[in-house]
Length: 293
Length: 236
Image 1 (cartoon, helix red, strand yellow):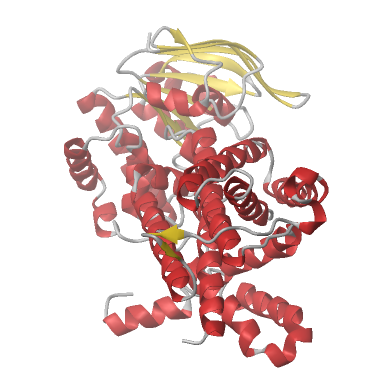
Image 2 (cartoon, helix red, strand yellow):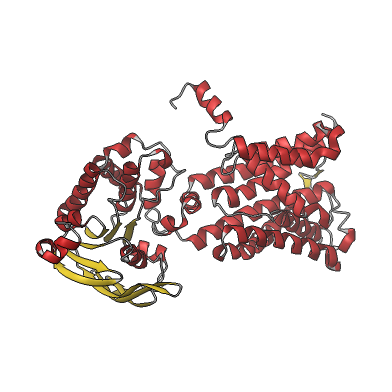
């Protein structure tokens, strides 16, 4: 594998982890979030600071990073308890802008210069780079997917689905909306934090603009494209949106236009996403299996 | 007394929909509240479940005051609602819908027993158990909503306009099921209905609600023969 494709692959794996986190919030719990990149950034900055200024290793910093992002996620999930969908969308956009400007203007976070000199991850005495980093990211993605899968099969997962479908009916079945919305926010933002930490140690230099609103839109596009609420959807979305810009590199100027067109087409013809219910992929698959309906 | 409601007032903004209503349901009773559309029947059930805040008055369930509790806490205490128009979870399967009803009661052996019982009560649900609830007909969704409420073995079952939108044959079936649950299993049921005749027939006592106030109350047998009620509600 060329260095170029390893880099693309690693970034796709990292973004897939972040997208899986957003999928927990949007797809499983039905809460809209347009500011997910903020948590991606919080994870990256937390890990960068803890390993540079803090002098910790990646591994001892990681639990703290997950704790910090999850805790901030919990705090910022609180508006979801009171706000209707449209206002929640605007609030989460606002959160994204606030986080980015804090990173940009508070000297502690390196200001406009960002944070550089982030150490490499060391595993079994080896400095992780290249293919090893790709494998490490893929490993973390596998763990993330496993957690998502376990969550969807658990009582908490079922409670989240019920809330997404009908909050009133769910709460009259004994499901606490507060508890499960916040659970989804904590879990989803902690996954974004994990992605952020990996990103920081892969790039080894981060700045606030990496985690702006366009990144949030990108992550949400991955989830919508792949299929909200499905297990593999976010991964497929990250793959497609990660590879497309490389394939269409000659068309760089039209990239945003292509994304928009792609999203509109999806919403018009495959609203459930590529892997969603009643999608072409699902139908073909069940036909191949020869199963009923 | 299992449920005792006193001077319940419910308002939506400045408009008061229920003006100080008092009634009670004893353990093992099947009580109905009948009245025209907009009389405030559903508001009362939603206030008991905790889905709509009450402006004033008290709601006591098993001697505890519950009017300030959140809906999910009341559900845990043993109140379950069959909501108006079923409100099943459309993108969950029939089986998953039923399992949500068991949320908080994590008991495998009981789950299987309850499912078996409910499938015998509503055989169509067994046939459709792997299907998304959205694909069910209106009548099937209504049966699913009842089963979803029953699976937790509630102390008090609130039933909101179960006959709405169902074909007459199905209304009769559903009412028979409710009556049997009450008689054979001793399930306490509070029924809210526009279909006055059917609910007077299966309930022991009834309250007649008119624009947010209780106008008549008593034994359903007696109310059924009351000329004023016959004229206004039964169209006889």
